[in-house]
Length: 276
Length: 244
Image 1 (spheres, rainbow over the protein chains, first blue to last red):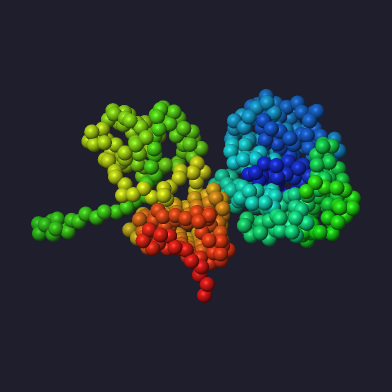
Image 2: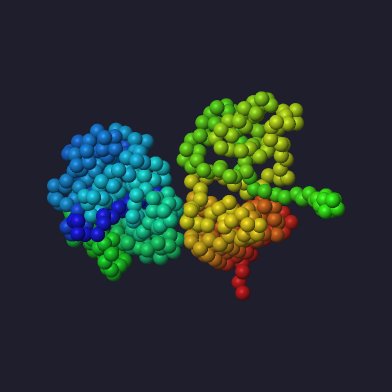
């Protein structure tokens, strides 16, 4: 790890809730960890934590981010190692506190310590633009903006991009947080029928580079319910493959972009019924 | 000696319009101050350096009460430039002077708790230098994001990218948008009825010139997605396509 380049802090953010930030954090975290990198995923959604459930670690939470910030526990005590991937760690949020328990200095210290131990630090931002969200993005080197192809999600993402350009440490130093767009819950057949914003529309409005397109799939829900990131639970499924590609792009690799197509939908139709 | 005389002859008075934030306290004042503190906590530099007027029409205060309120604001670094909505009887010479606004423009500046994109060349106070020649236009070469507000009372604003839905541009002069205008554009905010709004692709939520506005609902759909200009004819806001 020492020989590798410096740790990267990535925030997964969106503004709007329910677009897939936590799913994305878990899926990308697991994808990067499967490549051998040491990955810490942090749940910043204090009071409404979910990342522990999606990673299947909810029964092993003893200490959390707030405990570490308040000096109740040391960082290694609070980090939970994944049972399946030994290079994947979770720093859970506290469920009993709220976002006011996060302090700026505390978060800065935790991130600085994580930087010395990990290759990737992925911060799962809460929805909204308040304290939790701004502290989650505060120290980011890069940001993944998770957007559904619909107008409200796109506008909220635009707002978040504005905050990334003004409220982060990097922005205050006059630098620029590296921002990439991840479109989730993409329905190819709806896009074809014009019921959804097209990828081009979203890219035109937000004008940031595209990290990946994750198709809408039952696999995602199934994996969440099993407490396993989709990239671990069913690595050959369409959303998992899209997340693996996105993870490779995140490391700087050039991977051709696959726009989920109509033909896959026909397979879906054959193999399962989907509520539209 | 003669020089001094000449100078006296040259003394002139000119009227000038300025943009100021207007604070409107509500009763009870203590609660209102607490709300103000909450806003300031989020961005304590928000009012710094900006002229502030106090609109007291929503509260009944004695001269002492006003003085107390002004002092309270001063403690928070807010310097009150003048008072509005008060009777002569309520003011004393120690209080800031009374202001009467010519007309209440719809284009009042909303104090957004998270203003200023620092990446954007921001408000006039931040512009180049206090050298006599003031910049009469503002060029923004990155997109204006939702929730961002660009306020430039001194002249024209030119945006090379797009203005997002939920963003606003307020200019003393004209507004030019070379990308898509999806947010709000308010031109001629400094009482300039000759100001115009031009955009390459019209998707705006609201257009306003000199206080006269039209919302997207009131603008015909045929203008959508095309190049458009807007100007003021008397008190009517006119919008037309620019197809050449």
